[in-house]
Image (tube, rainbow, N blue to C red):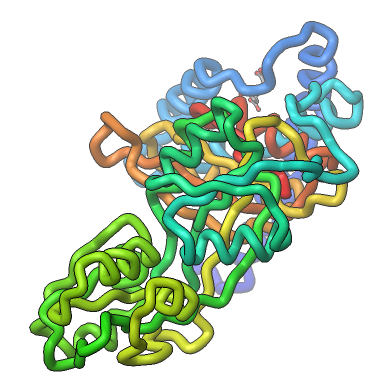
Length: 376
Ligand SMILES: O=C(O)C(=O)C[C@]1(C(=O)O)C=C[C@@H](O)C=C1
């Protein structure tokens, strides 16, 4: 039997050959890129790649090696594509993205819509971002807020997108796909939940507790201690508070913020019942124009992927090869396609950066239905 040293020497010789061949292959790919730039051809050619993968798998013997050689060539062709996108970027033929860069947002006389009623956390987020003199109105649902912007009755909407303890506000993710509205800003607000009821309500008189599903989730430890209370979801925490005022019923209570409790004349029965003491929610600012701030530093996109092994891995490699820092990934089911998912990715960058254009070009060619949700 050969010694380990001898086998390693043999591997070194083989690897030298592979390395030389790799460089030679990439040199040819540079030529392919030049050809494609000149002739306006797409970099990604799925048919050619599939033919290549089938051909190389034919040339090796065992199932293990067939799988291995496919993976190796998937990787080689993926590197080749990245090199080609880079050449396209250097030649300035990446194309323009349909977003207009602005020095600042047009906030003059802006009308802002938020979901809920007076006292909602959405309202507090709006006041934080736009200041207390902002012209505003509220609507019953997130969908209504999206529609208000789309049809132009509001210029901006403020929508919650994620909570530090309860996670994503999934409905807002889905609406971002459905509507031609774009994220232009974000703000994070600490959220402190109170348990509030009308005068005379006590912890022992409560039978039902009302709040937004996120409010119920974010206070689940406290609510679990009162397991007999029925938990009822309503559209907004402040709507729950308003309902308490309207019903004047001591068998029910609301999970809402302190301002809403005060506004609707409720007593606070328990303070800061949120599971996490630093509970906070991130809100996005949405508009109907494809604009971004020139100093924006975060991009949100979403895309579907072919239902094939390795698809997500290959798509995400566009971030790695363009040195882009991915900060978040979420997935949501695709409507009408059971067990297929749409991915939402946030990464650092500005739409004017070459690296970003390069990554988006690659993602657009290889993903299905890529949508840029905003740069902010
Ligand atoms: O043949 C091409 O068109 C190439 O760009 C080369 C190559 C490869 O590396 O083999 C790379 C990307 C395409 O998706 C298909 C194949």
